[in-house]
Image (cartoon, rainbow, N blue to C red):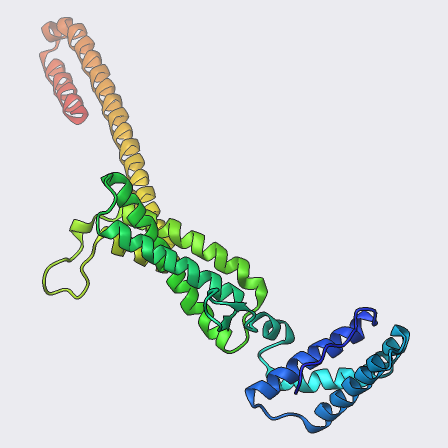
Length: 309
């Protein structure tokens, strides 16, 4: 179906949207080789022909609006018929995933703008990764940090391109997720840099039997590719730190309680010793008068002190 330019800017908004979206879906159905609904296709063609004839005859814009308003009910059925065929794609996703921009100036092929931008940025990060990996930068610190940055960005863009590719091919990419992909790339770069900073490479298996040779740049790339994994690792580290702090606090409290208990017991024992000493001193006269009673009382005092110990 040939794409026709129809002056619909002054038409009633809802009817204009129905016609515009119906034409968009009809063009997608024809280009994709899907089965065209006979009745809906014929009615849409008749409405388009009437509008084109009105335009060619230089009819007033009011006449064009009246044609669309008169066919508003038909347009509703036409829209529904095409929407059922193109689902899960929608007119919005079809328009957004239509190739409009050239990949590069010297190439004639066109692509979706968001994919083109991600491809260009991924190539920039790949070039930066190569440059910082072969040692062209004299400053070692800058070279190491830039290498981690480009590695994380490479992983982030790889994930975004791989994820978006399926939605672009199926024409179901919703433009509202553009912000999500931009945020995901930034988060991936940050995650990769963090992961490479907190993981000690020497602790990872790097012997000849392993398939992957872990390096800081590889760890940064993995962190950029899977920001969710980095979040889980950070949550795990935080949980361990919190557990350590809680353990230390518990030990301190128990130590203080034990110290207070020991001091309290020592004070009680000291008081008992002093009390026993006073009793013995007061029993001096009793020893002379009644030795049997004295011995019994002394025996009780010894048991009292033994219980205190």
